[in-house]
Length: 590
Image (cartoon, helix red, strand yellow):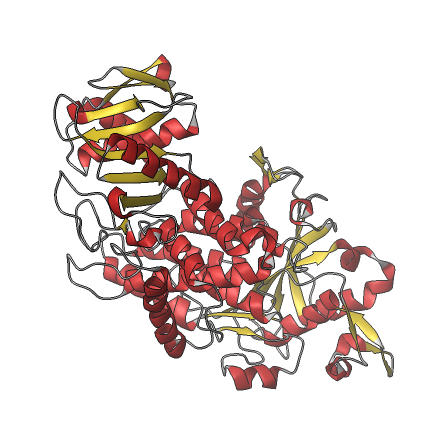
């Protein structure tokens, strides 16, 4: 798939803005003839901005200078781009400093000062610092070290025109918000994290929580009803202070918090200057228009360090999640639950499956497509997560994917179901058509700490109640409780010890008395190693028996997946046995 930058290169060459050499390794800017290597990440930023200057800002290429030497400077110093007011290039108008995307906030501030200094030397009224999607335009004459906001403008003028109050406007050909590539979005998210983490001032989990709140506001602002030409609120106005930006963004957050109080219960806990910087990173991006896979992968990548080890939580690899969901044949009128939903991976892949069905069933009817999957997301997807902070992350993950967060609750799934039902009446015994889950392994539930343990059949040892039991064993029973008798199906990741250890025969007996085992797919030892867990495990698929269903002999589909799309380091493999197993299972069922 062609990236946004590759498209710019192709369009720029076709329109005569530049010429590519050596198979695209070198760029020649036209008409100046200046050549540079595109392997330099800063050069990619300059090439993209050069294209924008001609295409979007309407500056003539003949008035754009590159690598302009600063007079009377020792050692020699050069401005990356200078836009002139005249064809003779004697009257500088805008001086641009280009830096690679992803530099630190401190490096960006230094680059901004460099742009200002060069503009003052050349006596240009405007300067701009560009580092990927993070850009800061300034009026040179009013800038000072103490109050740079007074010099900051929403953007450089278009074609020598006036400085506008807002830049990003709905429906504008050039200045509406734009979708973004996966790698660019990852970098944007990482820059936000670095700003909020502040070199360790905040714990990573706290920084992530604040980031999620800001993303919540960003998405809400994009979805807000406004006329074509109206400006977005999530941006920095000309000469706007950090306090003013904070006040406007916080007002949106407080309003959203009232409407949807289960997503976030706390106020913003960041400084105005930090919020100002994060808005700079995100203001030109449209999360709403960026495709779901791009958002999903970027957000998941961003969450990885937060989950892996730091919070005692682990991702289920995407390929395994997708495979488990595809094995289940879920439709949009089915009720689906993940009682250990973590960041929401199983629920999101289920939603994606239903979206694909919508596109297949209603190929030319956008409203019907939307209704088909949105009703499912709002009414049929349920999740439980014991950690309130991670439950909020799951909700945010689903909001980023265009919703499905309504029925995700922060609760202990092993506690009394009636207590969950009090939070949300949708959580009831014998109710769900499908359960897809990867329950926590290895943790122990103690009777002394959790009296509910004695209510579990799998906590009984003859006539006695065990003092403790493993979470993965209790989750088997709880999942069976939730499934509809006779038709309810489950896909669950289980450690192989449950399937093989002689001491756990009673667990296998429990499962086989209450369910029909449909399939067992053995996963490789390294399946979860990249995500911080190395327990050998399998995917087990079952159907709950009817209340009066008689036990009978049946065949069980068995398979071994040696390759699951990546190796133990997380690097992509060329092989993926899961697709083949899925085909074999379809034949087996027929």
